[in-house]
Image 1 (cartoon, rainbow, N blue to C red):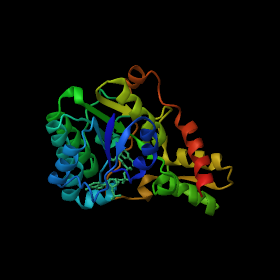
Image 2: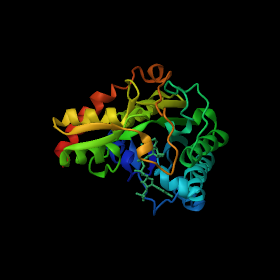
Image 3: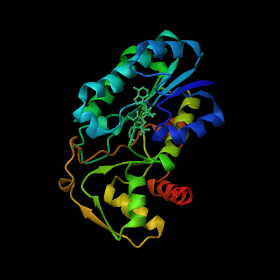
Length: 287
Ligand SMILES: NC(=O)c1ccc[n+]([C@@H]2O[C@H](COP(=O)([O-])OP(=O)(O)OC[C@H]3O[C@@H](n4cnc5c(N)ncnc54)[C@H](OP(=O)(O)O)[C@@H]3O)[C@@H](O)[C@H]2O)c1
C-alpha cells in the first residue's frame, strides 16, 4: 500500500514515520515540496504518486499563535485540508485527517465521545473543525478516517511540548508548578501511530477518538507522574490556570474517550501512565 504523509517533520510525524515504514511504502513531502495552502502543488504531488491513502498531519498547532493569526490558521488548517480532500477526490485516494479534542466546548464534566457534537471555543479548534467538515463534505464516507487525538506527547529530541519541557525542568529545578484545573487525555504518539496503522488495516471508516486509556489528567497529574518515572526528588506544586493566562481560551475538560475503537481494532489503547513511563525512559536514553 502506498501512503503520502504530510507534516511528517512535526512531533507526531517524527514518531509515526518509522511505524508506517514497517508496513507501507511511504512518501513524506516537506512543506517546501507540498505546501498545503498551495492548491497546485497539492494537486501535482497527489496526482503523480498513485497513492492509496493521504495521511494529513500538516497544521499550525500553536493555539496562542492561531488566536493572534486567525486568517492564517484558517488558511492552513481548514483550507489546506480542503485542498488535500479535493485532490483525494480527484485521484480516488482515501484520506486520514488528524483532528483534535479541541473541537469540543469543554464544558462537560466527562470526557467527550464520538457521539458528542463539536462546538470549538478557540481559533485553533474552529480551524480544525472546519477541516473536518471539508473532509466530510468533499469525500465519500467510505474514503475517510478522521481521528481526534488528545494531548500528545512524543517526538523525543523534537519534543517542545509540555512533557518534553517538564522532563528538562524536573532535571534542573528543585520545584516546578503545573496547572491542576484543566483536564485532558494524554496520548503517546507511538500508540497513536500503531492505532492509525490498525485502522487503515481494518477497512473501517468514520470518526474515531484516539486516546490512551485512564482517567482524565491535569498537567499537574502528568508532571507528578513524570517526576516519579524519573525517580527525581523535585517538588511538583499545583497551580490554577488563572496564574498562566493564555491568548487562546482553554476549556476545563479537553479529555476524550472512544465508544468505537475497541470494536474497530479489537482493543483499547494502554493506560496513559504506562505509555508515559515508557516515554520518560526513552527521553532518559535520548538526552
Ligand atoms: N500536538 C498535539 O498535542 C496535538 C493534539 C491534537 C491534534 N494534533 C494534530 O496532530 C497533527 C500533528 O501535530 P504535531 O503536534 O505533530 O504538529 P507540529 O509538531 O506543530 O508539526 C506540524 C507539521 O505541519 C507542517 N506544516 C505546517 N504548515 C504547513 C503547510 N502550510 N504546508 C505543509 N506542511 C505544513 C510542519 O512543517 P514544518 O516543519 O516545515 O514547519 C510540521 O511538519 C496536527 O494536525 C495537529 O492539529 C496535535
